[in-house]
Length: 330
Image (cartoon, rainbow, N blue to C red; front, side):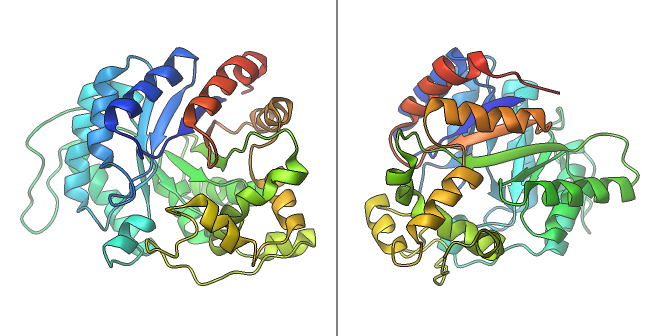
């Protein structure tokens, strides 16, 4: 199983390049960057800088969307990145979140994602698309496309058309079954890669510190539903999701403020349950145990995001105390 990190480009690009080199040096598989143009540095600029500054580590937008950029623009950018770093690049696509909220746009429906994925693949392959039958003039390799999905229709679309799916930990088995079933129905002989993205909080006392994950508990309830919390017997209320706006708890300008707001909706018991079951958190031994379980279940890759602290802390801990002890499985 491959293990990497997801790093929001909140710092200057020169610093982000240093983080990617650090992750490469300790043996991480990949470093992924969210695409939210007003929250972070512009993702394709960051990807290009990292691609030419590293040698082995994988890079990807996690994830871009087909609303703020036309698919033909993304196709050209993806081919250009692949030219820079070859098979280290993966094109991560999703329905959109904070990036489209900032722009006053709407999520891509499954039908729009389907059309966009097919057009992306055609443009990247050099085929003409649309009424004008216009294609990319520069040639190059076609990178794999990973689709971020949470609902049944998008999970099935990923199984049918994508090279991989990017999913969260809640209801992991159910999500994998939907992807595998759609791939089988489509008659695919290749395996759709399963890439899990999870929050990771380094903490010695999970019971005392789990409330720092409160905003992300709410975001999970908004995306995956409150059913997982209801089944566990813990309490989570779901406030209105102000996607891309000041009240967007999933992308807070101040985590301290967001934690205070989230405490009105998330019980301490729910935060602890979420930390144990939906993240890779705790002491290093706890994190290793969760990652080993995922490796044993044949998850292909895990990408960790640190909401509290610095990326250096997570990168160094993974390199020194987790990766050397992890059996990477099948």
